[in-house]
Length: 468
Image (cartoon, rainbow, N blue to C red):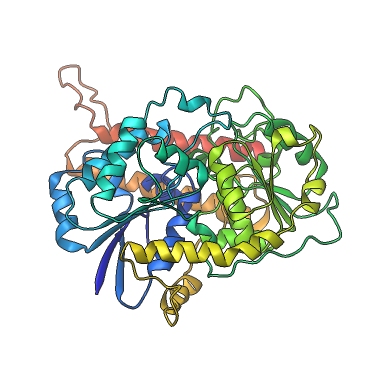
């Protein structure tokens, strides 16, 4: 039995509530991480392998030599699915991964890593992460035959740092094979109408999306926004604005029409995400993994590219796409829908799968794409799992709305009980002494937590009263 440690938050059939997902940071900031890590999990789920998710512990702060020793002792391989890790925002995590990998004696395989920079290449002129990327690549390549990257842009970037195609394999993103080896997409129908079911993905920092969001929110009454970030989920669950919006057209605050009309749904698991998108007529927007989820659902999907990470995957996999400069300023989803032709994508799938399979074999990993190696047990576990549904806003109506409110209040109550219990064990209460001669007990760290929970509950009650 080969024991594999996988960089992933959890087993795909493990159910976490929205509150637990926030508390444990199970998304590692973005729900897209769940999509490609689950895909790699399924790829490796053969009868001769035992897979253990690391809970993203491998890139957490303060991992010690003892943790590396534990990994060496208990596992035969460490597999690291990554997304756009070669960017300044991921630098400290890249450094931590490098430090851990340097202490490992077992094979280490990196799957699907990508760089992220502006399409004009300006970010590469003074690259602040080049040294860290070189150290990371060197550490990995001492323990594997090659590194699997997303596309040509990343391969060119690494070639400029001294890593050529002898040690770099272009494999795209494994997430497209999350449901098997033959992803197919339905052909567009007769066209979109104002009441069509549409799912939109948005990267809030992409300025050209703001007027698109505004127009489509007003025009399409059944359009739903599917956000992906940790802060978005906090907004959905607790009503916390993701930002103090300077531009109110961004759906990052509770005053936005998409929030107040309960036209947002947040995915906690890939299976429920894909199932939700199967009921949509069209998916469009700037999120690459939001687009992949649409493709896995078989729903016509169009990607709006805005940087190298989105463009290289769109080009490599032949996903229907366009940059903002190629589109009219008043572009409409109905126009993009007509362009969502997946003939080239589907024709290219066998070649993409062959490259991915070859990469896994080259690095000593058995995979479920080999003849007779279908991951039936894995698929059964995922299909039978009781996973939470897509998360609605606090403005959800009817029975769903009642369940949302009850769940939030129950979570706050449970947290309050936990904190009060912890404080009681320390022999500290919350009462302030009435005697001038007796000093009040020193507040514990739990008092601040308690106050935050109470504040959260009060804020939630105020929002609910306003809604009524």
